[in-house]
Length: 351
Figure (spheres, one colour):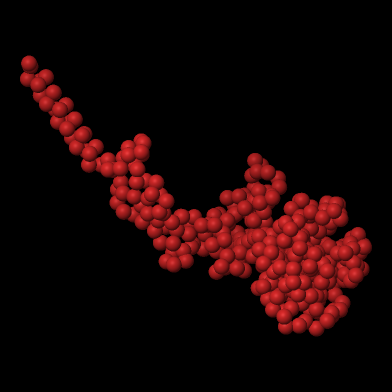
């Protein structure tokens, strides 16, 4: 046999031996135990902590932020708009690096040792979905950065957890309603809500002194179909965007007649305590996007709670709270807020 052939065969044999040795060294012992994969992989994957958490995990520590998010447009499954916490703040769990070809178990997990990132370049983050683009659906809010907001961070005008809610006096003048124009349109609402929205022995809630942001959100929900009511839905769909803002400005600035019911007894105040984080101890909301309950009729408040319990009205927080109250406590809580004086008009700029 020629020498070069013999050397080639020796080389091939050496390479084959090296390949077999490498295969033996790098192949896991459990490979192909149950099929063409590592048998231990299933147990290792099952033992991992999740890298991404659900928004419910944020709720226990960040109840106010969760409430803002869950009542805003970023938690609107019916509109196919659900932006969860980790979309902006990053994953709640990390990864352990254990070397090449080694299983990487989940690493530090929030809130024990891993703080979630707080976005700083909000303009870049928000415009991933909201930059003006002709290819986007018209229903999705679009902005042209060159002419929008003077290059300020988005959070300087918008609540980052509920962007339709504006921050204080930062509400753009173009989005503030005209109360005088709203008054001319308010006659449409008087049959159910009373003249100037003062309510009374009528089927609809008191609107006078209610938060403008909440009124806008409610009317928008009726217009889009996210909220349903045989009377309100067709009425709201008759309104344009300017009408909605004008009516909200009018009713939020209208004085409400502080008709007080029976004194609020301690047991009723205790039942209502589950509501005070969002709606205030006296029924005056801590956030303009949430409704004031003070001075609403007991029948209306009780009907709203029953609607949340039945699923006729949908809100992640309110559904849980309403179901947890039960019939007796729901009646007590409704009576407690009905006994408080209605909220005075807000002095801050309204949308």
